[in-house]
Image 1 (cartoon, rainbow over the protein chains, first blue to last red):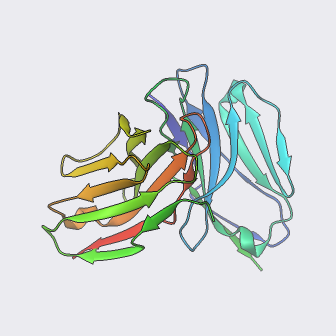
Image 2 (cartoon, rainbow over the protein chains, first blue to last red; image 1 turned 90 degrees about the horizontal axis):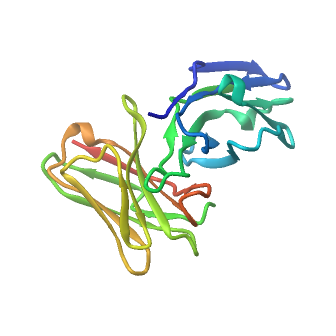
Length: 117
Length: 112
């Protein structure tokens, strides 16, 4: 069964600090997809990134970067030079979409990030 | 704006009632998913449709049902509502099952 663990329930940092959100996943499949979503106070879920299990290359998008390590089953998310607008709940999710009928997202419990001005 | 629309945004109803939540996927997306977000259960998958056919079921109660119409919009029907059904219900869509899912703004259901 697939499972996603986000051990950090809440994190607070001062603006401009770097912050890393941890995500550990469990799956028996060799082909799977990992995601990060942001849920700002307004409530919508905003897609940030998708990674497939065969691509372990780290990705950077502006102030955001993601570190995927299959050896530790982790897919961590780092925000560099944090800003107040980064305050949100961040969800890591897993999909075993290689299997027909198992394309659903399994979410972690989320990490509430607060950026203090 | 994700391109996924959901109506209504808010719904307040009484226990025992029935409601219908509506979702229009992004243009070109064939797959529609429904998720429930509550404080105690977190984000849980309910059901998926692909091009009009049910593809997968998750933790969906028997009192809940859904369908996807030929124009690909989807409806989630919740009946015999209980207080515990109060939650944020999200619809998401993707082109295929392997693509990223884009979420609508959600429908906040309050059962009193």
